[in-house]
Length: 255
Ligand SMILES: NC(=O)c1ccc[n+]([C@@H]2O[C@H](COP(=O)([O-])OP(=O)(O)OC[C@H]3O[C@@H](n4cnc5c(N)ncnc54)[C@H](O)[C@@H]3O)[C@@H](O)[C@H]2O)c1
Image (cartoon, rainbow, N blue to C red; front, side, top):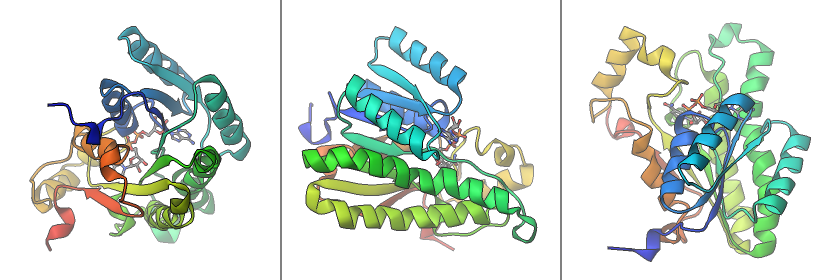
């Protein structure tokens, strides 16, 4: 039965880092639900191919290639998107990278790069998009954090710090923009099988650690997160603001 509470049909949704992986899965979920989706990536060729494929299937998909950590590119792209496609209703700050290294040996360049792409990007894109949302008194921002926003692990101090910061940026956006009708929440995925986690899935020791630790006894699939991404972009979540929903198979529920 149709339920308007979860309806995102006709919404314009910008998803960063959506040329592959979880971002692409959110894009497909929103497209199937009748939304118009603007896909973004820094890898132009993949983005073009993916968007062409989606348009061939009849979906309302658009591709805008820009680096989410570059201030001028972000401002320019958001202005073009709003002029060419329309006002953005939902923003998913999804782009993220890893530069794994032991903390004692981590280079400042790898530290800065991961903070820039995982955290500063959400500030830049969030601010550029929120200006329109604030003027229209309506909008939803979803930041993609991680289980590592609250639990540390070796070799990813830059990533955990960025995701921890993104949790607080989520609360700050919720605090400052709520009065203008703009909500901001986060999704914290657990261990999900994508290209980003491929080295971990292929490491037998790591793989068996994940499978034995997570109460559901398996890695997550990208599709496991789509429902939450749509919920946070739909009217059903209108009074939820500043929170993180963890989609982690129960990882934090037990010792
Ligand atoms: N896969 C997991 O288990 C997992 C767990 C927790 C959180 N996450 C988060 O989910 C998000 C997506 O992860 P994924 O596994 O799909 O990763 P992925 O590497 O498969 O996809 C990330 C995409 O972002 C793009 N990208 C990278 N830098 C960019 C930039 N500067 N500008 C624009 N696009 C850029 C990449 O080209 C890529 O297409 C990330 O924020 C990640 O931290 C993933």
